[in-house]
Amino acid sequence: MKRLIYIATTILLFLNTLTNVIAQSPNRTSWFEEARFGMFIHWGLYSAAEGIWKGENLRYLNNYAEWIRYRNRISKDEYGELAKRFVWDKINPEEWVIQAKKAGMKYIIMTSKHHDGVAIWDTKIGNYSLSKLAGVNRDVIKELADACRKHNMKLGFYYSHWIDWEHPYAWDHNLELTKSVSQEQFNTYWQEKAIPQLRELLTSYGDIAVMWFDMWIPYEQTIFKKEQLQQAVNLIRELQPNCLINSRLGLPTDAEFVDFQTLGDNVFASEYIDHPWETPGTIAHSWGYSSYEKEWKSTSQIFESLISNVSLNGGLTLNIGPRADGQIPHESQTRLNDIGKWLSNYGEALYGAKGTPLRAKNFDWGYLTLKKDNNKSSIYAHIFNWPLDKKLRLTGIKSNPSSIYSMNGGELQKLNFVKKGLILHIDLPIDPTDNFVSLLKLEFNQNVDFDTDIVAESSFGGFALSSKNVFNKKDHEILPYNGKKPSHIISKGQDLTWHIDIPESGEYFIDVSAHNSTKTTIPIKIMIGDKSIEGLIKPNGLMVVEPNENNYTEEFVDTRIGSLKITKPTKIKVVFQSAADQALWLNRIWINKY
Ligand code: GLC
Image (cartoon, rainbow, N blue to C red; front, side):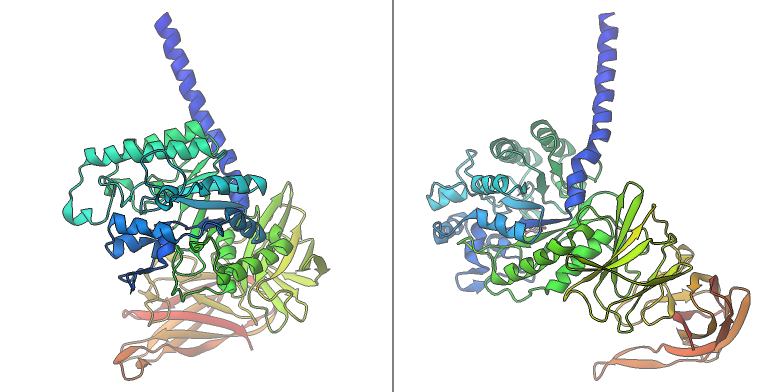
């Protein structure tokens, strides 16, 4: 009987944990999915090297200044000397928090220990910490945690759990050559340094919102054992049940182990991702401060990264690399302040917003984000390129908006619009309302329905049908653009299909951009609705891509196939067929009004 009760209790406990995991996960990540924009801080011993060692710049192609100890083969002792360069009376982590607030960021991820193995906090595990090396009584992590609490900012820690160049048994990429660390030895590092340090970080600084690990390949390809990573997960779940874990821990994104996916460095999504995710991004090239940094991104580029990610349901964790006196580079400050100013006016379009199910990069003027509030919905059109004809063409929304506004700073200006089938034509004010990204707000008194197959109308009108928006994509071999040939489809006599919604009656011409590498003309057929148009693609030659470099490619030219009279606006299926046995390289079909 006792045994039965024991088994029943165990099963109940197990079920309870299981439902907790499933029920808890949406709550645990909901703040992160609301936040969308956070600050990454790369600051450590390497910041004082500024990308230069003994008069020599960082070696090899990847100029990540925080890798200097490894790349320039610096000894542990000499590297430690960098601690003397820190200007402690100027270092004030509260300034980083204030800057993050000003930028409209909702969380901070601070490097607590990077690959160099130096603890930025006052660790009791060993003596390899910034304060001990510098001989000062400062715990920058504590100062940052206090400032975050004061300014109501969520705080997370980056912790390099895999690579640690200080510990003799941790991972170092040169082990690929020497293989001189065994799994048992690695486990010594894990049990004696990493796990106890994680415990310190999780118990000494209040609520920790995120533990951000950094291993960019799955654990099966590394020295790690799954149990070791599981141990870190258990520790975090036990000590900080609300703390999120990112996928660079080395385990797949699911609620049990990992709460959100971290894409590659500066890799922005190309399609909608259904679970929580972020891109870690830089304003410059390097994460840690580099004195010769030249690759500052423009503010518009950063807006594009942030907004396109939110339009695909993700977020951006944007890095600053302060100097060893704590100062944030001026270039970073100006960009962050511009973004913050914009977010103070238009934040509602990003915070808590999701993507729409429409095809990624559907519009040539910008991006859409979506917000639901009970039965009401809002769609925000983020306009990067203000159409010269003052008409915003927005394809794919089935539902009718109740009203559309231009969001001019804090003021809403009602706009006129017409809805023709699946296409909205919105009359824009004369000038863009913002120097970076102008915003429209479309209000709906219901949930919004979308048509995800329809091809978007281009700015100034017209429809470009290509491999990017072909409906029956999976039936075809579609080769990616290789920098020479335009994006194309090799047609093997099968059907290529698109759906378009013609907004106005009138006569429409059809141009086919294709390449025929044979010596004879190739007959093609386009069926538009119930009409069939036949045409011929003449043989094409080559064109010079770069003069004097023997760099040639196939020429793609437009052939006018014919025209089509539309008497009433309708949704139409377009089918393309090539009648020849030979492959025809189709670039795009262009349909527009005369
Ligand atoms: C890479 C680099 C590292 C940087 C990180 C940020 O993993 O090794 O230096 O901290 O990306 O995403």
